[in-house]
Amino acid sequence: MSSDILPFRIEIPQADLDDLQTRLDLTRFAEELPDEYGVSVKRVRRLAEYWRNGYDWRAWEAKINRWPQFTTVIDGQRVHFLHVRSSRSDALPLILTHGWPGSLVEFLDVIEPLSRDFHLVIPSLPGFGFSAPVLESGWGTLRTARAWAELMNRLGYERYGAVGNDGGSMVSPEIGRFAPANVVGVHVTQIFSFPTGDPAEFVDMTEEEQAAMGVLQRFWEEMGAFNTLHSQQPQTLAHALADSPVGLLGWMAQLFDLELDDDFVITNVALHWLTGTAGSAIRFYYENAKAGWQPTEPTTTPIGLASAKGDFQSIQRFAERDHKNIAQWHTYERGGHYAAHLSPAVYAGDVRAFFTDLLGD
Image 1 (tube, rainbow, N blue to C red):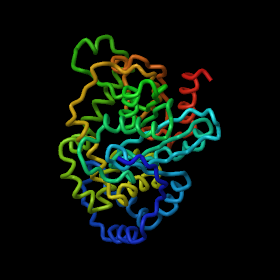
Image 2 (cartoon, rainbow, N blue to C red; image 1 turned 180 degrees about the vertical axis):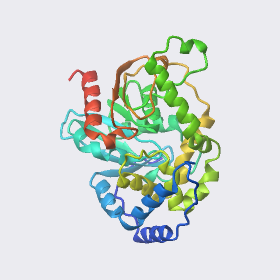
Image 3 (cartoon, rainbow, N blue to C red; image 1 turned 90 degrees about the horizontal axis):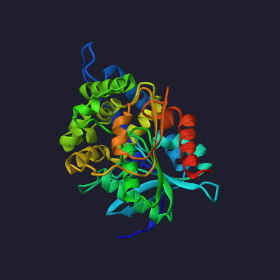
Image 4 (tube, rainbow, N blue to C red; image 1 turned 90 degrees about the vertical axis):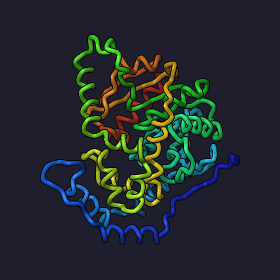
């Protein structure tokens, strides 16, 4: 297997953009009843109209191309990543991992503030964006974590931190488990620790914990269908997502908060569309569901949480069961699920403070 690291630049062919425009022009929108049955036609129409007549992919292409990009092949899979070196010679490297339906676009607004103090490696998850469609099975959380450890090793980083949001909040702790001698700490925006069903786990729950349980229950009862479908039959959905950009927009919009700006939403959707990875990306859920892997021991690498009101609410008693070295537990009033985009200064400040405290700088 080649360990070459090759320079990369995003250059979507104009023919692909013209084809997208034609498909947007020919969209057949769904009908809907007045009640809420999911992502509304009104919202999809508005976003699609902006995509057709206002959105500028080339501007976003240039925004991403502003940063050094590379590809390399790890475990048979092409991996695309940004690699931004700090001017500080003693800077700690960080590897930042996104989730679905996001992309590395999640972290664009924190590159400048974080790169003052850290070397940044921001990969596209295998099967997402320019990390090419995954063509073989097994690319879930664990295989990705091992690949990220190899990527950091290949870049010459022996000591580094792991940072994640959404799916990246699952991958990053596993990098620490896989390479504990290398990972100094893990910073995440969610800790996905759930009840096991043991009644003893619910004894003496605080009001805050009970409220978090309520948020979790409502999410799975009202918004969990995507997870079930991705985990069971991703290919069944992939046919529609590969053929209709507005269909892809409607499906991905269910997990893009209403407070997000249209450019952020459309860029994430367009990146999946233009790279042909809409179906490949959702298989991440299937691989995790079919792996059936459960850690027998808690993680020991220091882990820090920076959650936001309005996002998935982590529950500390369950987190402490799965992670024995929780070094930080912060909750912010705003930021939502995409805190690095919505509150970049707060997010970057939390990441900086977490690793500074760990290193004693």
